[in-house]
Length: 214
Length: 142
Image (cartoon, rainbow over all chains, first blue to last red; front, side, top):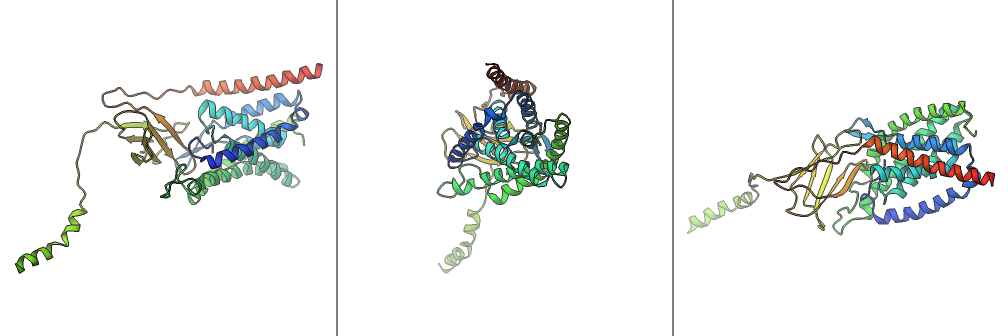
């Protein structure tokens, strides 16, 4: 799901950097209040796990590969703000060390996976936890993969519309929405199921150690 | 004269057919093969790629990778080429490379020590969070 360099037009990534800058500032505002000596080691461990999970590629039928995100467990354990900041750091490292996701596309990747993924997870969990907590965690994790997938597909699919030559030849990513939406979303429906299983396991581990804020 | 005009009139419809012929010339040439794979080693197979000579606006080659994920193309005589490869799901590359030309030894792909980079990344994360922890402790005991 990591968008590489050269796939997004400046008309996309420059406004995305502006929006991400505001979001990063918002997320960092309450940092001193939310971080304490107990939270930091847990956050470090979960961030490292998310970093590792994002690098484990799993073959998906159809000739492509996918990976878990790990953003749901960050969001459910630490909230949207810390999750967004921690996941942005994960994306930066993955980009710099592995070329997984571009620096120009970092803001779009962070907004889609870090922010929208965290918000989707927290909202789904809050909405469903009264019915069944385990199911709520699983659906939250699934949503944290599928919503970013939708946003990434939209960001890629609009490129031929907003950045093209006079003759209509796309300057950046060449496939339109009719291709990107199924190509990104269908695999991520299945990746989301794997993410759900992983997140439930981590959630139970964290609950047993009373990490969950409730 | 009438026969000549009739003959020309009868042959004229054949002219466009001749113009649509595609001629074939088999030539020996040194191509470059760039192998693209996902991080798990799975080939980036049957995906679209474009090759641009340095500074060119239009691609010199537009094709698809083969079953092994190889992008095979004829490079310009000198200079770098820009290789763009796309999958519909957003995977791909957009990179510049200086491919080996005829007679030159092939440039082996840099063997990335993936495990080392994973450890390095985890190390950076733990160091950053360790720093945050240190600052928090100092503030608490200040």
